[in-house]
Image (cartoon, rainbow, N blue to C red; front, side):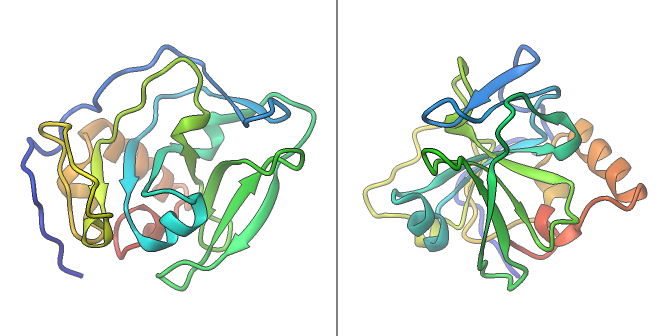
Length: 189
């Protein structure tokens, strides 16, 4: 798949900010509480039409983190709802069983060890995207005011944009046989 960068940035730089850990999060009603024990690998602002439909808005902001670093704190578990994806692998969106708010998703058959945490569920932190993806289907009124953040028409090769430290974390997951390449940048989502 070819992609087009519509803004430029230094690739493989550090994420936009380093959060204080653990980083707490919750669904809209507070039934599902969790925290991240490690900073996100990378944060996507996805403008694809599926994300638009699934969120009911113009884009989805997802912070990618290893599932091993996503700790559920509440006794109530989120409910996994399978939905299709453009890649055909599907995704499971985990939602609160009380308010139905999405908290994170996993692409593929569930073997993927990367969680796409809905950035709006993270408390006390302004989460900014590291990249805008699927901009070919963005809403016309959406502009990009975040200087230096790359924007690509489709998906991208993570080796071109992720910081070296995040690529190393991904390499370790792959060596352990715990990551599905398709969901983390090798052939689109």
